[in-house]
Each structure stands twice: as structure tokens, then as C-alpha cells.
Length: 354
Image 1 (cartoon, helix red, strand yellow):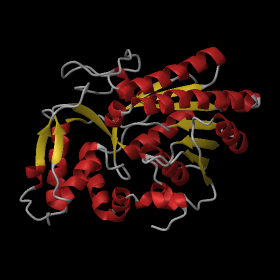
Image 2 (image 1 turned 45 degrees about the horizontal axis):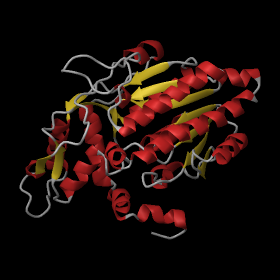
Image 3 (image 1 turned 135 degrees about the horizontal axis):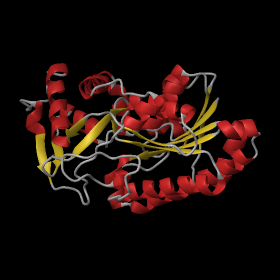
Image 4 (image 1 turned 180 degrees about the horizontal axis):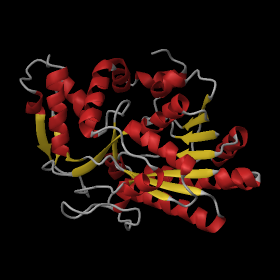
């Protein structure tokens, strides 16, 4: 099959691209605008593979989307291109509405045009897979209860609202035009190649530099953590096995407070990186609490029972095993994150050697 991955140079998208090339026979087109969070070094291991191709394009460019679909002729569109950092959405919401809502609309229209011209056999197997987030559901009251696929939307941040809007468009294109769509909602991802602005890599790298580890509020916000390679497996499995119109929650069954996550990172660094920066006695001494961000949801937790029952998917990594792999990866791949922090990872796009 031929799979188009939008946002394939991002964190989750690059994991999907690596999985498709490494574990399937799909031809893959990686389409990415290469904003600050897009890093082609995250897919360097597959860049020369004969089934892989990269195109730099913006999903908000309607002509470019139609051209890409016409030339590549996909059977599956895995749509991951999005602005995704909540803090940035609070500061600059317009970019999130533009990319996540308008961009999804433009991509849906290009997909509908492409799908309508396919043979009946290919129309039947075509899928437009919208990769969404559990943040569209808002937060859960108390320590019990889980997000279901039928949970009502109640987004709290501009980011979550923009993803909710995109999901509604996808459902409308299925209902109105018959486009075979899928939606998945994932919990918090973590793992290798994660951009350093996100919680886990931010804490790892700050600790290695002897810098403060800022924790919002009291650190009691609860998230369900999903190892990114488990998520990549799930996305490809849904895209190739689910019926049109299906919706699945994808979670790691790993609920932890933000404070616990930071403490676990510190404990792993004590073991794996015992030589600390000057003046640091214990990594945990770097933890300090800062004012909470506006609209910060207290608890997310996903019921991933449906995907297990219907499609047989289960996460392979526990939080302990996944976090250990993640910390070890950042310790072993200093060149990757040092180029991100310095900005050198962007120079190759301009034809400048880093």
C-alpha cells in the first residue's frame, strides 16, 4: 500500500515513518512543512530507502496538497501535521487554528478529490486517518473515570480546541461525502526524538545542564503516558484494519502525576548519569514549583479497551521500561539534541552544512 504521512518529520510522525519502513512493505511519502518542530534527522535512518520519499509542503497550501496526492496516489493518509504545544497555543492561538483547523479542511478536500477518482476497489480500501489527542475531552474530575470514545468534547486550551475542530471536520466529511475516515485519540507520548520543549526531554536536558526543573503548580496533574513506538504501531494497525468511521482511544495504561514523572527521571539519571554538573548534589534538588499555566487540565486517563478488543493492540512498554529507554536514548544521542538546542538541525534545509 501507499501511505502518505503528514507531519512525518515531527515526533510521532517520524516514529510512524520509521515503523512503516522498518516493519511493513508500504511505500511512504513523508510530507512536512518543517516548522521548528520538524527535524529530518529523526528520519535519517530511512532517508535512502527505496520505499521512502520526502516532500516539504504546507497542508494549508491547497495546490500543493492536490499535487502531492495526484503524484503519490496514496491508499492511506495518516494525518499528524499539527501545531501541538499547549504553552505555545496559549501565547499564539491563531497559528493553531490556521494549521490544525484550516489545514485539516484543505487536506480533507484534497483527499476527497483524490478518493472520488479512484476505482471502486481502491475507494473501498482508502482511509483518511485523523490523529487526535485525549485533550479534546477536557479533564476528568477526581481520581476515577476514563475517557471513552463517546466522551463529549470539552477542550480547555486553544490547542485542544483546534484539534477538536479538526476532528469535527473529519466526521463531517465522512457523514456528508462518504470519505472513509478514522479518528484516534492518544494520551501523552514520550520516547526518542521528542522535541526538547516537551516535559520529559525538557527535564532530562535541564538536569544534565544543572538547570532548574520547573513543575507547574503542585505537580499533581495526572497524565496517561504512551511510548511513541507503541503509538506508531497502533496508528498503522488502525489505518490498515479499522472500518471506515471508526474511532479508537490509544493509551499506555500508565497514569502518573507530573511530579512523579520528574522524580523518576531524576532517579534514572542518578543511575545512568552519576557524574553531575558542578554544584548539583542530587538531580532531584533541581526540582522547583512554578505558577500553574492557564486552563491547565488536572487529569487525563484513557480507556483503551476498545482497540484491544476489536483490533488486538496492546502497548508493549510499561512506563518504567519506556522511560528507562528514553533517558538512555538522550544520554546516547547527545549530538541529536545538541543540534536541536543550537538550531543547527535547521541549517540543512537552507543548504548550509552544520
